[in-house]
Length: 506
Image 1 (tube, helix red, strand yellow):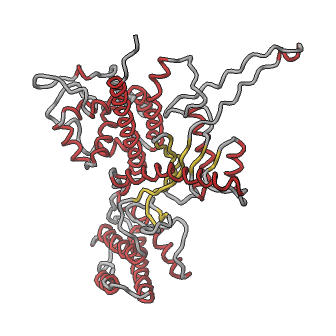
Image 2: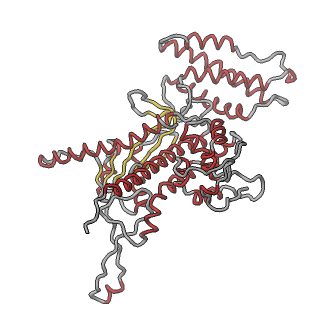
Image 3: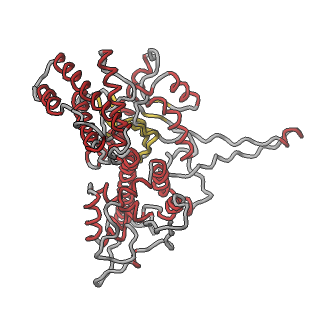
């Protein structure tokens, strides 16, 4: 059950246990004013279809706590402790007054991430970025935007330019409807892809098989007991298997032959354990596996089949390859970077406009990001009512289909065109290409900020749903930080103009 809060809380309504009131210039107070809580509240309330049961925590408390966690790089427990100690954070999550007790248990943070899934987070990101344009639209609802100005971040669907009325020459023309003029292309769209690595150990075939063998031994211990009719407990050869694994794992640079021999041994031990587990499960009165062991058993079966197939075929490639038993959704993503040729996590196709970032696609399987260009451009038109003037992307996006699509809609795709340019145009095109490369560095810098300053460099969530929610939350926090910087920039620019404006002549 969900109970919607009454109205939007203001800073003066927050009660403190001591004299005074909250500072309106505090960063958490400013940040709270940038988020459209009421609009997001309507979307959040749709997740609760039942009117019975325990009342759920408000959206502002759930989303605000997640934002605090990622903005300050806290753990779930540390987040609750800081909220309990800080009245500004309590105002940010929507409490009416300061309280000494924790607002909720840290374990609820996991449920917050499950409820605010990937699709919901994408819509919240759109609402937050679209809120910047609302004051201008309310002040000047009928004033169309100048075609020469670039689109402002988060604007609603732009009204098409008005077409002057033409007197019909014939009676047939008078009944014909006038077609609206297509708006001019404005703004620049930056495209790129990155990977959000998961918090897993670097996977090798030998270490994965050893981990699966140890987990299968624990499952045999849980399923077996003396009343099953066995003369003695089924053997697992765990000491012998452990010794065979360490004999290779402790080597500094083991040879390929010794690694293959060790993998073959671990496959034998693991296969024997899986057959023992199947026999135990067929007997009545066997022990029980907990939920985690039940999930991991299916993953271990798939891992065994994959490793057996690669071992017999003498290859190192297989589709849907398992690289983590605890996180079976993680896949290897080949990026071709110098420091990390292969990363293990989710691949993201991201677009940027005026410093704001949007996740166009999030997938745990590898994909070609060049296929997302058309959809990213169409999403740009939905947000701003026009196509971009230019799309700044790297070489992988410059295939023939994307070039033809951009040419059809009058969009300039960055990079050199096909064929040899004319001698007179070569110098101008080179200058434009260099300028495009400089401007495209903004999205690369955004990835760097997300991975170094925030948690995009290592996703600590364990489940697939919570990991996707955590990834999307990183971009929401970065967009809020950008909006906060833009807000301060406008404030100081206005203050500077007022101070240094020359007096009007009499």
